[in-house]
Image: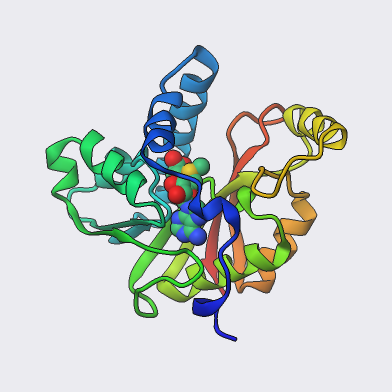
Length: 224
Ligand SMILES: C[S@@+](CC[C@H](N)C(=O)[O-])C[C@H]1O[C@@H](n2cnc3c(N)ncnc32)[C@H](O)[C@@H]1O
């Protein structure tokens, strides 16, 4: 069976227009969220520098387009973005500065499990806050392999990892609840790092949003 005909997990159909709008607004609400967004955006910019200032980047999934100003800060970079949710794409396009939006040569419905792009379509892929929604190692690997296929040189992913205060709290909460599929998971660092290697990546740099405190980590990866 090919990746294209395998089922998507329930999370992938979650975002309608109301949820997409709420997602855009949530990251600007409250001091803690604003601080995290500011730091995450800063680290996304740093990741791109570490990746050698790539000439083309795919933002996958783009969500509400939080990283578009950072991606567009390089005036000659080719930009592509995709998301499986039409509502997210609509919200992102509506919220973007016209000059930033005009920079995207592709803004399309795309499924991270089966990207409608040729091999090596872009130099780098930015994949923020998708993997920690995946329930199984098999789903994470399917996505990582697809990102590996479309990236010529490297990929940046972010997800929740263990080894910090927030993850310890979250794991205690998880042990007390039985939530339906689609809820977000902390992945052990050793586990995700083995999966990254299995998908054909070497780690260039680990970037923690708040070292020791936050569970959100970026991995800047090179293709082997
Ligand atoms: C938590 S949001 C993150 C969006 C953006 N990367 C950010 O950090 O702001 C997760 C996004 O993943 C998208 N998504 C879920 N499953 C997907 C899939 N199989 N392929 C592409 N996008 C997917 C959702 O529609 C949503 O926009």
